[in-house]
Image (cartoon, rainbow, N blue to C red):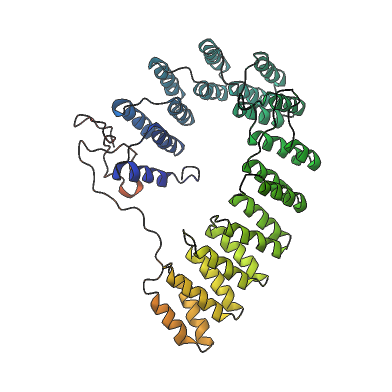
Length: 466
């Protein structure tokens, strides 16, 4: 829910799991909630939750808590309070977290206060012999934007001179900044260094995101052959090892080839993926199906769609309905019915709108008997019919002189289609209850006071404000 920016639903789910269901939250749960409130612009609520954790939980806030909160405060134009929170973090005995410092350094740079940013950076270097190079990437980005390329590259060189063993997450940020500002020679040199340093299980220096950045840069320049060579590139150092590519890496390069109409190369990579101990996922199949439909290779799209369903992968309504519609337009209504029948054999069941699209497609092609078979499945599975589909079926079968047949079936569907209902609400918690703060959930805003996490006792009257 958070990744989909459905913040109110994320908050409601926290409330449902940890307030109503009495599941005990951990710091990761709280951090997700804090992040949600910060991104929604409710940083004061996020801080209340942070204070509640300090007062009541048997654990302390983590560095991630401070990362979310400092970023939220800075985004709200309250950088002074973010600095205070950094001091509080250090006072409570937490180590100097590079990403918390980076939030503040970035905030001051964006305000044009280079001196304060440098002061914080110097403090970080004093506290940490090894800090995260993402801070240098922040400086580089700011210098590049100012047209101060020399200072940007000096910052980059100073980082390399320290010879830190940098994680893929850090190096990937550096790669993106270098490419963004035309420093491709340095970016490729860093990539080759990362490959040389990749010595699992001792040290993992690259990940699929690393390869995605490099592959995408090749495609951006139209260097398709080089993209494939880069995808398979390994280090040259004696003890370096090849990266075991994951599904996400395959998905990226397959998508790039499909975008450029190079389906033969995409198919080869898909077959290679299937030959490994990896399973193509929803994005893999979706990319190929959409590419086949775009190229009007209907039979290939149908084949991969069958494979997707046979693999037990979930077909969401928005995607499935679009594919069903295209296939039906190209004379594949019967095939769509077969696929939908297979989908119906598994849980969760297909969305009622999928049946609406396919049943209407069958009827429009004069396949009323087949539409009845599919309608029988809908009723047998208890999926229910949408009102527009019921109306459409009545009119269609009436015109065919088969009104009684459809009426018998529709009468079996006595409950019709009902959209999913949200989780039931509980009555407001009383003082001393066992519910962690979540911020007022949408469905009960203004009625639910903050309580305490399950097992975290506190005296009556010490609740964080609601």
